[in-house]
Image (cartoon, rainbow, N blue to C red; front, side):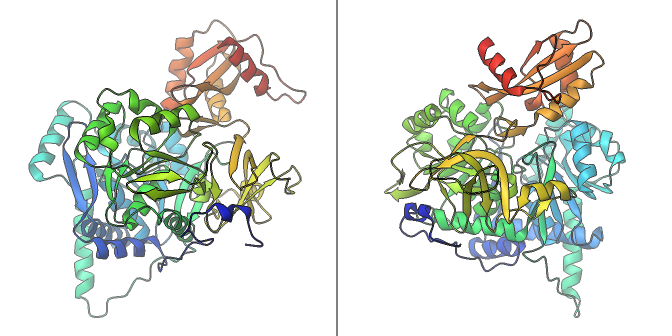
Length: 578
């Protein structure tokens, strides 16, 4: 960094100004090193709503991901850089396939199972994914879109894969009888078969006296396409290299080394691992630290979390405001369940102060807020904490804000000309550091707009206080965050406008106690159009969290001189209506 930064003084004793580098060239090496260190300890445990569980050890995850890498490399003859789309909820197959793809030098394309067929098709087309790993529950969705994409191979897994034979057979039979597993209607390979084929390739490779050593990807190699709205517009793939992700893991290791104990922690993974927060922190950092990862495939309804809390002593978790607000209202959720929990790492959206205070009073567990983006792998800032006995304590007196920049990270607040503003003044938050993405996939113009002069321009507005703590005072101009998921008005508006009876539409975000924000639509109709009709139309095109929760019909949309909707006026009108 160029000069001494004021926030360094806020780092707890033992946290360095720069993160200690890992001795790894890629994430595959991180996985192998952790497997050698933690061996037969449980690495991943899936907990179903009925309490059934299955686990994989660190050594098993390493071995199975090696087999999947061999299947991709030898069985499918994929070249380095090939994109592998993973359409899975939290499951034992996820770390096996994600780590395997990374070991093979391929690129993981995290894909949201909540996507509608239209959204899925757009992401598969844009990424150029050649392989799709999918849960059998989503077969009908996949069948509708794959023929119009570059996907050549479909690998299908079931939620019961890796369970003992009797339990697996029981679960699969029940799911089929209940109609939850639709017919795919396209050629596919079951994941267990793919892993068996990969293991055979590895065995054959080891027997050859002149076997070629695969060097693996470098830190500069692309590892992940993390789709995001970015700072404007529709979804695009943030290109994160092995080096970007390793750098963020190094930074997280630096700030948590004063309170997390490697090999002794248990992490609850409720946030989906296709989300960059859970991918980096729960999956990769959890594996590196030898944490036992408790996977919840579907947190809705919240009682699905009961077996995980009841049967495992959770010591840390990642969460969003919605989860922290709702859990204490559950009759089964008791403070005793968090007696070993050090911290809940909160991101994705702002944690409301009242939610934070109630959670901490109820559980005795600290909420550690931070600020991040898909474009930064994701973490940029964190609220510093230290361990006192069996609990954590904040090192700052005030509650609120998103904390200090991570070691090795520079953050500035700049004006419209890109010049730094005075301490305490508001401006755009820009970031520079080794965790900042390489750019947007196949979008050079958007990359150039976002990465300027060596800085990532976030589009978020904030301010620094005198101690170097960052406060975010506004988000990207129009983006809506619903339970931690980004929703962009342009996309929702475009879908609503497809209805033949819609003449005009504008979409804004409004405060919501349950989800942080909710989507609100203002519609100009050509003839009588009911709320039920327009909502049903939206549900065919948009994931549920993007569907407006409320519609208002107007004679016209207020616009400025160049025809842009005046969303500020619409937000004010929504607030006045309540």
